[in-house]
Amino acid sequence: MKRILSAILCIALTVLLFTACGTQQNAPSFVITDKPDRDEITVTFKSTENDNTLELKLKKDSLSNDQNTVFTGYADSALYDRAVITSGNTETEELAYNDYVSGWNLTSGSCYPGAEEYTPKYERHTFDYEQRVKDILIWTPEDYDASSADKYSVIYMTDGQNLFDRSATATGSWGVAESVLAMAQNGGEKCIIVGIENSDGWRDNELTPDIGNVTEDSYKDGHGAYFADFVVDTVMPYINEHYNVYTDREHTHVCGSSSGGIESFYIAMAHPDKFASVGALSPAFLLFSDATWVDWLSKQDYSQNAPFIYLYCGKASSDQLEQALYAGTVTMPDNLKKINYPEDKIVTKLYDDGIHNEMYWRAVFPDYLKYAFPKPQTEPAK
Image 1 (cartoon, rainbow, N blue to C red):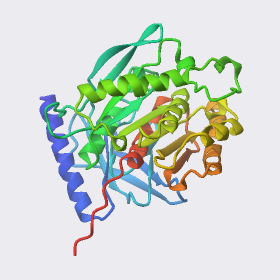
Image 2: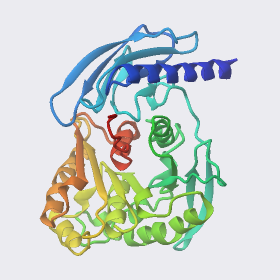
Image 3: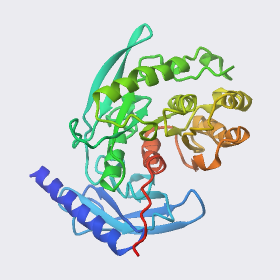
């Protein structure tokens, strides 16, 4: 019975979304699914580009039942890219808002993209790595068909151990599968996620690029070049051979956070012919001076291929680590400007209250998807 109710809810939400989008230009329905113990949720829509704000009280929708309460409202996704929700005793959460993720599910206590709860299933493969082994987690959507003519894009991600399982950390998982599903359901790209695990005590070693002198001695033995070569020369050929994916640069992306953010940035910038975009969330750029970054970047060739660079960081007063990483994040665009990197290939998103954990990276990831996989521009009807 629960599955039937969930299926009915999902279908009804789809109809609601379609109807709302069809009646209001650039105004997708914002949907929150919650436990049946609240009558109202307040959302403040904001923009990282300007001071636009809109406070909206979401009302309980007729689709609500004894298992889930559905709240809906409308905001123009051309004006806002964040939604800050406040709900009773639930902590305030700051979420990405765009045409790819207009709905979030609160029933588990934390917000995850999508109208209903979802448990990602993934495959695990083991590869030789230096003098040990390394696991790779591969998630494909339920409608993935290896024999189909339809191919999938690929997002390679660091810290694979934290991407899918909601019990992975105290603040949950990245919810990447949920975000990618929401993108596909809202007219975006179909993707698979390839997560490389970094949980065996070698994380700092693996995810620190070796581009010059580090600012912290504990990171001086970084093997980031080896890790990058492992991704490009071992993991990518395996995925290209065994999965129904595009093998060209334009459908290949890389993303990570913290040490995984700096390494993802390094992978893309060291192999610009392989990756269309990089998402560097809360990246540990401060491990190297700006002069070291400029020197290394100036030696690369971006004349033919320049990956799109998405940078995010927060600066919550309660989080000293995120504040420290914030400084390096805001100076990286200046470093890139010094080597004449195309400015239209860089976007920086800064959240004043952003904290260094999976809750915020989960909340920001759909915003990265908007830039990595922009919707095709359609010609207006004549």
